[in-house]
Amino acid sequence: MKNSMMSKKLINPEELYDGSAFGLSQAVLEPNSKLVFISGQVDWNHQFEVTSHSVEGQFKKALENLSIALNASNSSIENLLQVRIYIKGELGDHLNVVGPLLAEYLGSSRPAVTGIGVASLASPDILVEIEAMAISA
Image (cartoon, rainbow, N blue to C red; front, side, top):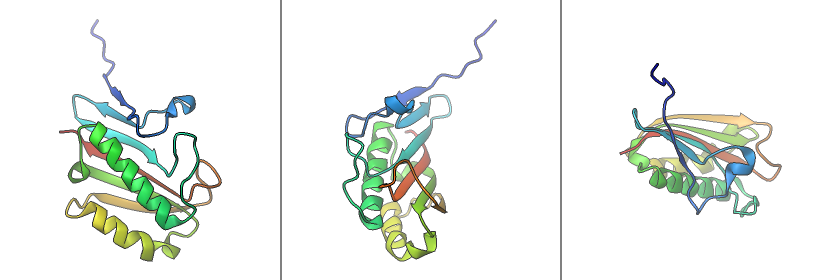
């Protein structure tokens, strides 16, 4: 009987924190479809500490980490299919800050985007988390 399990490639760039303690990879590539699923990117260093305490600072760092995960997956901003942005609190309170930053980051890529205000994220200091789906080149 043929094995029907799909293969997947786990992607964990050294520049990002090691998520193995939480049972996660930074991204997973499904080679047949070339779909890349990117875990929520946050402003965490290798010691699981935030480097900024503002939504703007954390949003910029999460976008930077998203780019690292995309590049490690042989993908790019242009190959983004979907982006989900989670912000602690009311999303509308932060649109004037994150909206222009997101538009500049995405450029002409124009993926599907969802913004969600949430009560909490992975740790009390995390204010922003960005997850995505893309196509690998």
